[in-house]
Amino acid sequence: MFSWGITFLIIALIAAVLGFTGVAGAAAGAAKIVFVVAIIIFVVSLIMGRRAP
Image 1: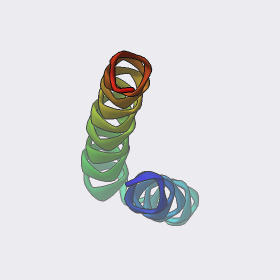
Image 2: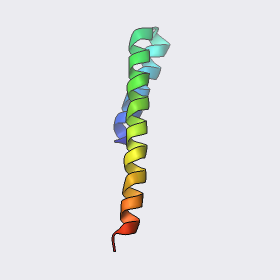
Image 3: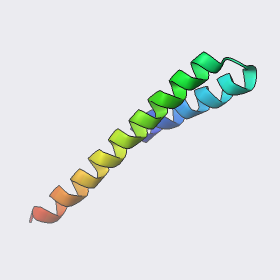
Image 4: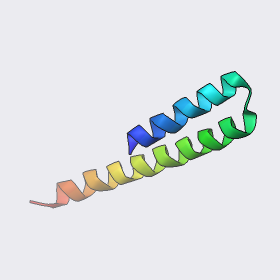
């Protein structure tokens, strides 16, 4: 999950350097969403892991 976020982040950085602001904004937005979802899944798995014997 984090690899997708890092991929979108790298795409956003390359697009920003080359001047493609629309692509950079879209890729940065996708990277943010993927990171937030990954963090939420990570926290939920930590909580569920503590409950299981």
